[in-house]
Image (cartoon, rainbow, N blue to C red; front, side):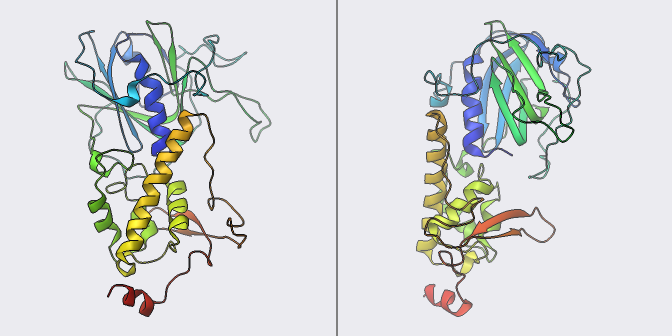
Amino acid sequence: MPEGPSVRKFHHLVSPFVGQQVIKTGGSSKKLNPADLQSLWLQDTQVHGKKLFLRFDPDEEMRPPRNDPLSEPLPKGSRREEAKDQTQTLGPNGPKISDQSLRSTELVPDEESSSSYLGGDTPAGDAERWLHVSFGLFGSVWVNEFSRAKKANKRGDWRDPVPRLVLHFGGGGFLAFYNCRMSWSSSPVVKPNCDILSEKFHRGQALEALGQAQPVCYTLLDQRYFSGLGNIIKNEALYRAGIHPLSLGSLLSPSSLEALVDHVVKFSTDWLQGKFQGKQQHTQIYQKEQCPVGHEVLKDTFGPLGGFQRLTWWCPQCQPRLPTEEAEQLQH
């Protein structure tokens, strides 16, 4: 699923629509009925790690705006998802987006366990209505245009992706959400102290988690301590810190753990800024055959027993696995 920087970009794209009423809906979602959002007002949007939350209410009374720098509009030309208006269809020969019979074949992999705070399929009573959006591997948000096929599928068809949800607003624009799972909840669960892109990110808590007697590549993907961190950030931070992915955190020196957290934050922040500037993020080890120095890169699948397994790339020379005895000496 998209990592923290991508979801923050999605949040940035959605924020300008806060304060507008939904006047038309469409999409292929099976779990959520797009028509339930008809005539509702988008009152707020929040982001936490890999999760996006949208608050809808039946009236236009709004709370004072939050002091959120991400709610400011993006500079002209800095977002590839926003473009000229297009026809309200899913393609040149596609069905109208209001057709509720559309069904998507996109799958959303379960990278994280299902969240207990997710609510039902429809907003409840007069309570605040928060829509929780969890994106799949190729999930995205498009503004005022629809995603187009970049290549033929396995059957040779150039069929455009089908949005899960489309929201047209009174201001004239629309949002299209792709490859995502949506559920209603009474309130968002936002813990900025574990969000790697939050100013309130708690380094001490992250360092304590990394110091456990388990491979650091497992801990980095634990959203309780590194919310928003995904496989790309994991691989890049470990390489730049010179740490083997299977190194036990309890055997690494405090300075090594500090360096690892530093690289997590810096790479994530640089990635986000690059997205705002329309730049593609440069990776040094992720999906590479050679590291920047020219060494051969190894690849394997790692994950806790019975847990989620993720592909990992590392350089055995730049990221040597320390013998147990040497690692223990570093602790003294």
